[in-house]
View 1: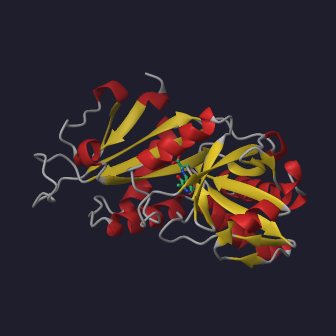
View 2: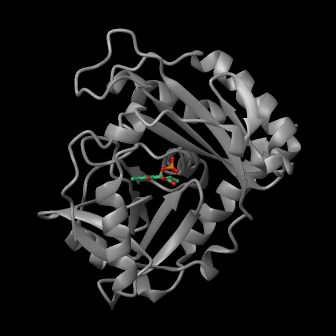
Length: 287
Ligand code: PDD
């Protein structure tokens, strides 16, 4: 069996066709669970500690006791990646409240389901070649978006609405504010300063976003972690989205109109470059 067909499920590594989920798993029936997507470069996970910290916060946010805890989990993930993950891939991890007779009430003794597996994913190309057209969609999600919840129906519908309109990604807006993409964070460059909407009710604390914010002082780029208005986004010198799978991508259109000059701007290019350097340092050089 090819290595990327293995799944770690509740402490065991099995073939994907042997992995079993109960039809009454609460993840399946209620989306009662959380997830993470970790990028693997050169056979090494990028920012695994930050992903597991966020997983811990998400678990706490839904009252789920993670077993094993994140320290043990980190070791299990590292061992799995070494043996079973393609060199360039992504690791999908999901934790649910597990199987129980269907009932909205939490089971008295939950037996959480925890699984992860890797899938090949080539590294993204140059940012200039991965431009993004956004479609704005009213944010009708709940107000705990800082939890990386498996309940993604609103995100799925928004993404498909964007694709149907000839765009690449949906961006959630509510009143004057721009929150985030269906599977990405959004940031703007105004007067050379990076505006990064912070994690909160309608924004996930993206790991990629966090890495950029951390790198900015070293580049002499000032960062304002504050809400972003649609007006500011439309008038921004540069607009960009970030995510584990897309890294940094320049936004060139918003509801069919050009934004950010319609090209990949210098700050976006520089941020993409330093992120890549950090990835190379962490996943290749520091091995
Ligand atoms: N999504 N906001 C949302 C709603 C997301 O789903 C994601 C990532 C992000 C960016 O977070 P990060 O930089 O940690 O990937 C922001 C993942 C990749 C997904 O669902 O596939």
